[in-house]
Image 1 (spheres, rainbow, N blue to C red):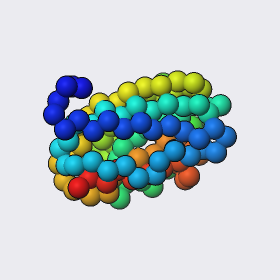
Image 2 (cartoon, rainbow, N blue to C red):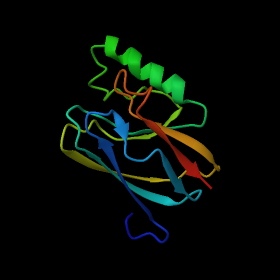
Image 3 (cartoon, rainbow, N blue to C red):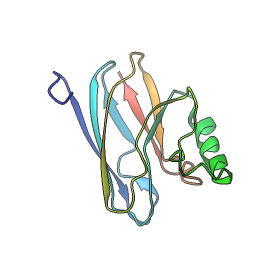
Amino acid sequence: FDKQPNLATIELSTLPERMLFTKTKLTVKRGQPVKLTLTNPDHCAHNFVLVQPGALEEVGMAGNEMAKDPDGIKRDFVPKSPQVLHATKPLNPAGTQTLRFKAPAEPGDYPYVCTFPGHWRVMRGILIVE
């Protein structure tokens, strides 16, 4: 995957004790291969979930609801939804994970969010697909 032409390599991190990503806008070309590395220097776990345009609140609220489900943590607090395009596993403090995917074929603003309960309201950004 990493040897594909036009590979977009993105480094993203969380801000310790701020419940924010270090970048709130990322830009790729439609259909472009993407290698996104997420690092978590924060004291609590976080994930990265890319969703369909307009689905931020629906997916964020579904993540909140998973706190009531004993299996929520087993499902990494990632809602089972066609609105979810790609997601990392939970990153514990000091964790790093690389997510590889093809950017959506349709141009638009694709929200990304941490779906751990309560995080989505502030811990989010936009993947701009040109």
